[in-house]
Amino acid sequence: MPRQGETSAKGLVVLGGSREPRPPGEVWLVGAGPGDPELLTLKALRVLGTADVVVHDGLVSDEILDLAPPQARRISVAKRKSRHSYSQDEIGRMLVAFALDGLTVVRLKGGDPFIFGRGGEELEACREAGIACYVVPGVTAALAAGASAGAPLTHRGAAQAVTFVTGHAAKGGEPDLDWAALAKANQTVVIYMGLSQAGVIAGRLLAAGRDPSTPALIVENASRADERRVLTTLAGLAAAAEALSGPALLIFGEAMAMAEAQVLSVPPSVRSTSPALRASRGGR
Ligand SMILES: C[S@@+](CC[C@H](N)C(=O)[O-])C[C@H]1O[C@@H](n2cnc3c(N)ncnc32)[C@H](O)[C@@H]1O
Image 1 (tube, rainbow, N blue to C red):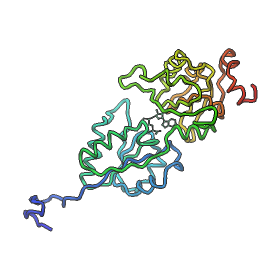
Image 2: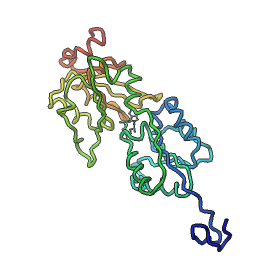
Image 3: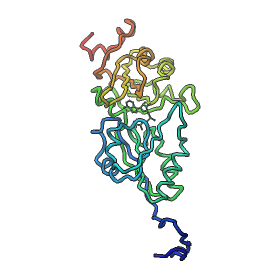
């Protein structure tokens, strides 16, 4: 080991007071699941237990954060309205900087890191910096929402496919989605970040030909103690969304008729043309 002023094996001069250079650490992109700590995977729990630093977003509950070692530094990069929010570039640089300092960094994200979680950008930032980066999948919100409502996302004869889309438009305004494809029957569509755009989304789907009586479910805070679910139809989606504030998913498709939720009162014209919903409620 070189003493102060000596040259190390790599040709670097060791300066007085500086710390021994540490080998680079690593970054773990870990899915924390939808909120219920019991939906954390065993691997996520194990990796969290090795963290020197936990960089987390706003959807990760305190119950889960408390599973990190007490000495681990916690940094919230949640989006904030009033104070500075970290940009995606800043988050990437932060992960890399901690890892270059020899630390094990756990980047804890709600749901799954690769489902609307921007895990791809963070993985790229690590790759570009030559930092080892590993991904631990998590239970994405859609799976928790379907499970707690008792509504399968795919169902023989009612939903041959399931599609996850974002209702958030990159530059604000209306989401740029393939409305004709999403309007086809016998499939489930799950919309993340779509609550504030529910009226626009429903309008586009109806214009593209999706049946107004298609069962639609909104699940807020899926898997958490304060979860709320509203079952309505595509025609009633916008009105139902107004009562909720998120985080929430909009889910529509024939299989959602199986959902156990509060049924929002919808105009009789809509209700009477919704055989799937009527059948699932015993003809009511
Ligand atoms: C930035 S995305 C992150 C999605 C996350 N990576 C996942 O796999 O669930 C945030 C959106 O996910 C949805 N979401 C996340 N957690 C949720 C939950 N517990 N219940 C309902 N929706 C949730 C909401 O639409 C929210 O606006």
